[in-house]
Image 1 (cartoon, rainbow, N blue to C red):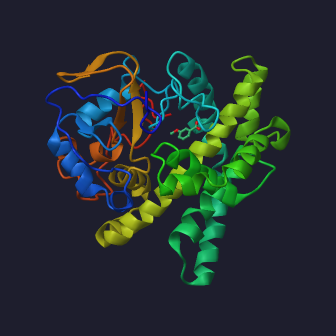
Image 2 (image 1 turned 180 degrees about the vertical axis):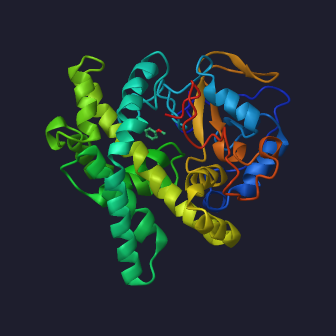
Image 3 (image 1 turned 30 degrees about the horizontal axis):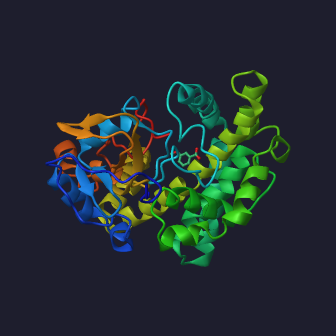
Amino acid sequence: MKLIEGHRPIIPAEGIPVWDVDPYDETILRNPYDYYAHLRELGDVVYIPRYSVLAVGRYATTHKVFSDHEHFVSSRGVGLNDFALGKPWRQPSIILEVDPPEHTRTRKVMARVLSPKIMKTLSNLFLDIAEQVVDDIISKGSIEVVSELAEVYPTSVFPKAVGMKDVNARYLVDYGAMVFNGTGPDNEIRRHSMAEAGQIVPWITSACARERLTGDGLGAMIYEAADNGDITHDEAAMLVRSFLSAGVDTTVTGIGSALWCLSQNPQEWEKLKADPGLCRPAFEEVLRYTSPVHTFCRTAGCDTQIGEFPVAEGSKVLCVLGAANMDPEKWGDPENFRIDRRPVGHVASNVDTHGIVV
Ligand code: OVM
């Protein structure tokens, strides 16, 4: 059978609204808000013929499908390609592209290494580098925010926190783009990101080896979990790789989006300056408002349902997290960027499952 974007074409159940849209069109990616609104308006679940996928964007449905690993699995890939039908472009992540119970085991190791207690020991490092970056910006007078701030900060601080001996900020940013654009269709954007995979993937793989890490970083702690028998040493290398794939792109986008939100909402910027204690809820609001990961897919692992509609095994479902995070039904006034909203339950990150984002 002819596959569409690496998955089996589906025949949508009678009654599911059909919308001839390309969610991965650059115009929509640049300004997705009307697309999000229309997706939610159409119904709980929508069929998109262009990629022969279903899509969900209402908060309640999106949260439900995204978290329901019994029926909607991550292990067949969180992009359009179905790993059951074709070889993925890289070895699947053992934390992202996996389901419980395996996921539970690897996630436990990650959670321990990323615990608040351990994060606290890194706060001076994070602060020192932030100050250096800010000093540098002040001396320059004016900057291009994405390339001179949003990319610079995570790629400076992150390799140090992990304890990487190999430093290549460009490769880290480009690998992040590869991982996330790799979830989308085989379009110009994806091909452009993948063009350098031949150099970058081997560099990433070798940078995750134990001997390429210092003894005192987060990477070393992952390998210690392997020494303790919690995971294998091969799995340790894969979890270090997950730091690099999940940690860079999302933070670059988050910081860039924070500056965008604050620049568009000067009254919120004044509020933040007056009360820097709002920094954390402000950043959560940025995540809700901009959803650095706008979409992850699930795959129906068996014949199942979304609401009243039957969904066949193998169906790819776009979980449009960006639409869920802007659902007025959930948020009341989602279009207002309010740094003191405290948007508990947003699906931009850290949905545990088992509502797994990671
Ligand atoms: C990984 C990975 C990549 C992207 C995102 C993510 C949100 C994990 O390679 O493990 O979690």
